[in-house]
Length: 106
Image 1 (cartoon, helix red, strand yellow):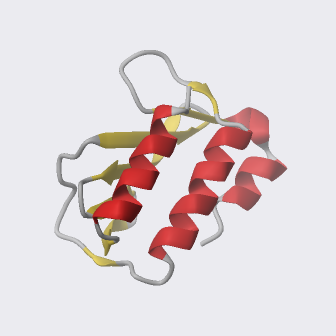
Image 2 (tube, rainbow, N blue to C red):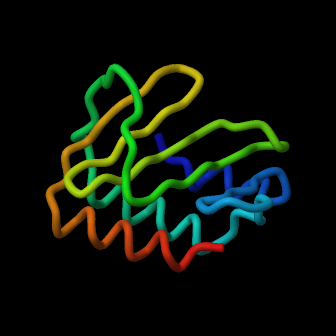
């Protein structure tokens, strides 16, 4: 699904965090990261039995409640929502680009 549309439609309802600490407003940088993720993973998502630990994470919250959680490993991305968990193998170069982009988020 296009997650950028809800962020644009109701930006004041969305926050995020990737590192320990308080959540920050989820603005254009998060939308840009989601665009990169979409371009990288495309339709490559498949069901996963659960999240893995990884080198980077992003939590997206709506009205303070967790809605989406991504974990980027050295070869894949894991995405968890209240509806389930998925994984997309992306390979090392793409995973590195996603991780580098995560580092620029608040």
